[in-house]
Amino acid sequence: MAPQALTERELRAWRTSFRMLELLRTRIEQQLQAGSGLSNADYTVLVLLSEAPEGRRRPYELGRVAGWEKSRLHHQLTRMGTRGLVARERCGSRGMYAVITEKGRDALREAAPGHAREVRRLFVDQLTAEELDRFADIAGTILHNLEEDEPSGS
Image 1 (cartoon, rainbow, N blue to C red):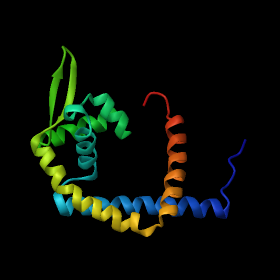
Image 2 (cartoon, one colour):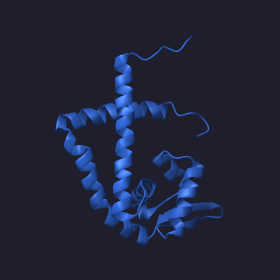
Image 3 (cartoon, rainbow, N blue to C red):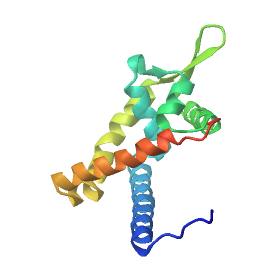
């Protein structure tokens, strides 16, 4: 069966969404870098670890929650470990934990207010409460379908 071309309506929705997400990601990344020296990936890892019990997670769990492949997470943790933001701790004979350090907690505390202001300015304040709820519902539907459709071996 030949693929069906997208209609003008479908193209408009797709291209607008794609461009919005790319531009929003870029602007958030720029603010984080300028305001705290953290990348969006750094911030994501620090938030996920700070929300975990005792500030630690197994790397496979961290990768699953972040939606990252094993190699991306490994490289990210290595870079952050070099900067003292996270540490690796042994768990049993072969296991490992990724752990947020005090320096990582300090970096997150410093970055969070500016990050929240920028998210509010660029995203939240542009929508009414009802639009924000609809947006979350729509994004949740697409996210759910993406997670269900995850290719095997990821």
